[in-house]
Length: 281
Ligand SMILES: C[S@@+](CC[C@H](N)C(=O)[O-])C[C@H]1O[C@@H](n2cnc3c(N)ncnc32)[C@H](O)[C@@H]1O
Image (cartoon, rainbow, N blue to C red; front, side, top):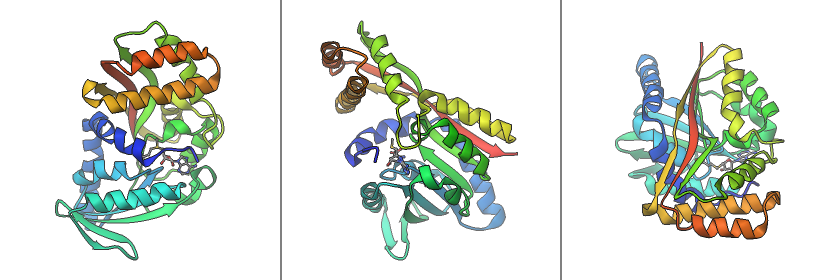
């Protein structure tokens, strides 16, 4: 397991939701709205690496009135956390079995929770009926050969948000910022279960591989903007980055400690991401 805790995912959820590129999201929603109206049916969405269900909570309110979500993750504890969080978020739970059926803002949303190791079985998941494949904060974990497999098997529009782009700016600046970022990038490339991770290269690889397969691909920036009003998030982010940098052993422990102490008091932090919409032509 990559060890994403429900607490960390909950802490970052407001910043994740704010960061999403609204115009790109609107394009996705309009597309599904037209489909639902034309075909008079429930739209089907598969969320890869769903964690505790943040992507559903960000998107469902803007999608058509009848939705079916399949939330996929390999971590059973996160799937359980997702069920609990989605139930807590609903206005009303209509049924819990065989699939969770709930209402939220007058929309009817069915949710299935499926445990799959996507490193092994992405082709099967992409073969399930779907109108949209989506993911959030997932694609920078995977490796280039896996991305090629993914793009080969993809037949459905893809909307993926918050893929790390490698840019960070902390304020006020600290003398170790650039060396820490370099070491953090080295850590980004370590194996997260899919082979050598693509990290900040992932968005570019996705774009190239999907364009090769005649998808129309749009990238839109979705940076995190975090200030002192979210001190707990700033501190958790700095602590996580410092831990990753320590694992690389590229920087002395004392330098990492000093950077971390300064970053716990940071006033602002920007972390770059890409949101991507790809549609088969
Ligand atoms: C950074 S978290 C993002 C979670 C969620 N999408 C969100 O935005 O809060 C990455 C997610 O990918 C999942 N993941 C990592 N490797 C996976 C794999 N091999 N198969 C399925 N899920 C995986 C993790 O369990 C985690 O939930």
